[in-house]
Amino acid sequence: MNVALAQTVLDTIKEYKKIIIFRHFRPDGDAVGSTKGLKRILELSFPEKEIVLQNCDFATYLTFLGGEDEIREDEFYSDALGIVLDTATAARISNQKFSLCEKIIKIDHHIPIESYGDINWVEEERSSCCELIAAFYDTMRGELKIDTEASTYLYTGMVTDSGRFRFRSVSGETMRLAGMLLNLGIDTDILYAHLYMKDFEEFRFEGFVLNNIKMTENGVAYIHITREIIDEYGLSTEQASACVSYMDSIKNSLIWIAFIDTDKENEIRVRIRSRFVTVNALGEKYEGGGHACACGATVHDMAGVEALLSDADKLLSEYKSTNEGWL
Ligand code: AMP
Image 1 (cartoon, rainbow, N blue to C red):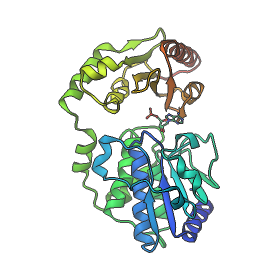
Image 2 (cartoon, rainbow, N blue to C red):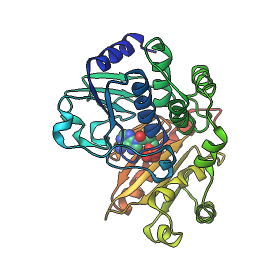
Image 3 (cartoon, protein in one colour):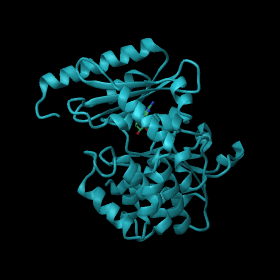
Image 4 (cartoon, rainbow, N blue to C red):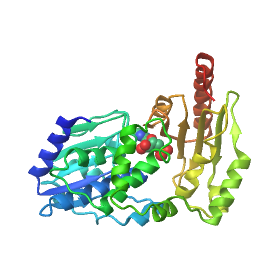
């Protein structure tokens, strides 16, 4: 934990009456959990400050965490401190009005591509941005306050971004901080029900995915979910995008990729996952990025799908021929 930087962030927060918190578009549990968690901690700790969440999109499956604040006029931003969480690049910030803020702090755990903040606090080894916010609270507990609501938001992001505490990024420190939050009284029965129960249509769709996974020569598992399939199963694009995780435990298939048609013409969302092999450079080559073993990308047609698959297959072939112990 970079204590000096954490202190600078806290000192800067203290300087401002108005704080606006942002996150990446197409939010996941970590993006929503960290922003809502930080907001709640700051509200409890500094009741005199105005703290708002200003984001332009929302994920339906996370609505159980509650809403965000209405988007304000441009003038509202000019005297505010903007804090952007869980977002590697400025282009991925959900609300581009972030740049109107007087000062910007970036707090993130993705591989750093762009230092768009006036202060940039990135700890790549953290399993989630929520873990970093929990560590921020823990280090500054003399000055910050927390409650069950804030800890539930942060715990949500810690659970979801770490694959339920399974990923390599999970450390003893992750578990210690998760334990600290759990001790604040989180109702995990309700939380896990919200996160992991599926609609019947989603189960039928999972069956379709399992039956239609394809494999490249060297073991990249993949599936392309077209608009027709999404409509046939009556799913949202967001629900359909969950299919990447259905391919996560096939032996010898160390990279797995879901291509999902979006609502836009000629735009295919790519979700890339791996174990052992580092794939973020592959995502970056195709308008994306993210973490070593979980990243995103965008392609625009079937030629893009084929090119990305060919690169992924080559990467996996190289990895398998130069490494041992993988499975
Ligand atoms: P996703 O498959 O969209 O869940 O993305 C996996 C991880 O990569 C998440 O942490 C995303 O925030 C990150 N990510 C996805 N797309 C991009 C991108 N275009 N640039 C940077 N990071 C990304």
